Length: 144
Image (tube, rainbow, N blue to C red; front, top):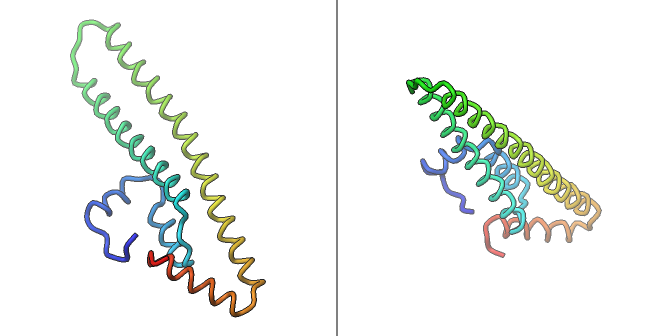
């Protein structure tokens, strides 16, 4: 929301998330197009779920690694543990597909909005086009 250098926590967020947040924001800023509150909320939700999935995947990896060092005489328990981890990973994989679909739909909506706005701007008079560019500049700086 501000035009300042990213701090360490923000950079870490960009590196953890599989959603190309930085690219989305950079393109929006370059196009002088501010995301609407609804788009921001949707993107925030997608990123939050994506980060949660990354953390859960990391935890499952740690559980699997601990399993290799776990010595048990009960082979049935070890087998059940492996099956539960595999089932959990499968459920999360299905949710990742849903998240990916939601992200694609969101990006299509954003792309369509930019395309429509550009088309409308091309059909405007020069004065109206300048007013729109001025308004975009104000939106990008949070002055509207």
